[in-house]
View 1: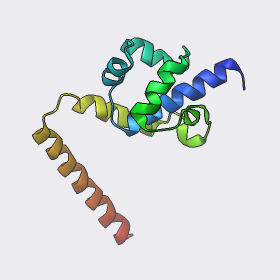
View 2: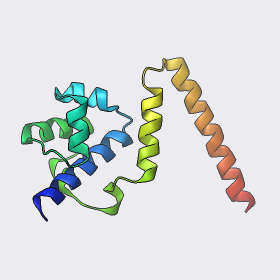
View 3: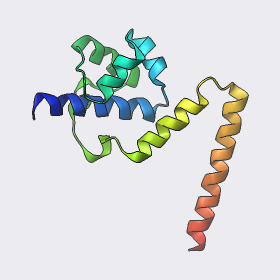
Amino acid sequence: MTKEQLRETVGQNIRAMRVARAISTEELSTILNITPGFLGLMERGKRGTTFSTLHKLSDVFGEPIDSFFKHTEETSYTESQKLREKVGSLITGFSSAELGLVIHMVKGIQRMRDNIENDS
């Protein structure tokens, strides 16, 4: 694996873990004490990171450090992950009541999907 491929793998894993936990780039960059722009460059594999930052990420995500170096299809940045990130950014700043409404709406969509699948 080349240096560039390694940076891309680490970046994809950081992004996938961040999106899976619905953490915005602004929130994570604050925790890591870096700018959101630099975090974006890391996630796109354009900039590397330090062991210290990986250690902080490991703590934040509750994942072992070696998980950032694993390349699997699941960690590739997909359209689905882009959409999840978009949803996360749209709900940033919502109140608890507003988030509750979003959860209620999503559960309704899940029930509709399940009903359609069961009718097929």
